[in-house]
Image (tube, rainbow, N blue to C red; front, side):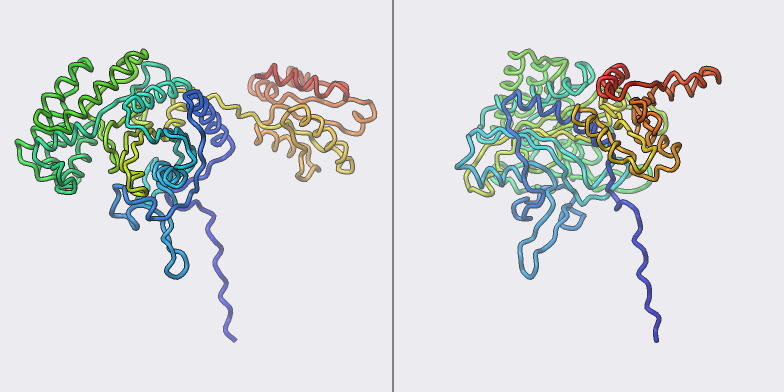
Length: 498
């Protein structure tokens, strides 16, 4: 009889491009998201939690990574010839579906914020995951550039609320209409036929977006025939002539010492283009609205280098960049870079309704912003574990459970040790792994005398690092209190530790 082949054990490993988040990570993220939500709520935005799964038709195809299966989304087909479904790749496309579906019940304009994970079927790399958190705020149903200006001011307030002080960030604003005007002047955009030369424009957008990394010469090469990097790999260019490329390069170099001068340079570049002039007028209006509210160039500035990669932006685009330096894995200083981006997308809801519905919004990269706060030591999460009630007599578990119930009812995070209580040292090691501030000890002797032992684990750890043997023997980090005073004494001790 043939021997049945055993199934191999599954590998205990996270799938490539994904990661696990443990207690401290989740706690820090919650603290930051709560602060962001306070700002959004202050601005009048309401929370929305939409489905993580959408139909592929509803999501559309706007991701730039077209070489991946399903154009960059995780998708599957329902049984038989059912609908194709996909995990959402951002929080904006689902909003368009929600507004189109419930537009008769929602106020217009509809102001909402959303926070949650998104999934992209992209090639993973260092710091590039296939699942990550986003935090969005959008206004749907108004064409007024006052909505765009409000998104920018709200983003500025949000960064300061989470711990990025003024001077360590800048919100940069541009307009895709201006870029379209520049491309019209350069001969690669026809307002009457927007799909014409779409591939070339896509290469131009990606080239502009790489200015910081490649420099002017590298971008100019991508605008022309293409560029070969240091490894010998060749990237095909947009095929623009030298004169066409000069117009695009002029656009990227239009930023001047003041917003007014920048707008003047842009207006000169788009002379003859109706859509380009309209874009410059919108930028001028946004700058005026922000200035009236006290948001100067130290917080928000006009910057033509902002293009944004997604294909659905139709007007103003925004990007929040952190300007302070950090040290990379090789010890080299570098700026942290972008943590948020967004813009106006007036055609996204139209896909569902057939009618133009203006919309604008911003998306914060939660993991990147958290990493920035940690790099600057500005993450103020409470990473303290629970009070541990140790078990000295397993037959008295009811007494220990009663003790921990009193603590929880008083709002003190606590738990009874539920492992093997035979080894008391193992209980203290558990408390150390849990980052517990205090351990409670009640043996039969303490029970008979109506007292408990309180072990200050934070002070004990400090003493163990620096104390002499005599100081350690005196055990100043452990003391005895009346059982009836447990709640009040723990409150006092925990407050002192903070």
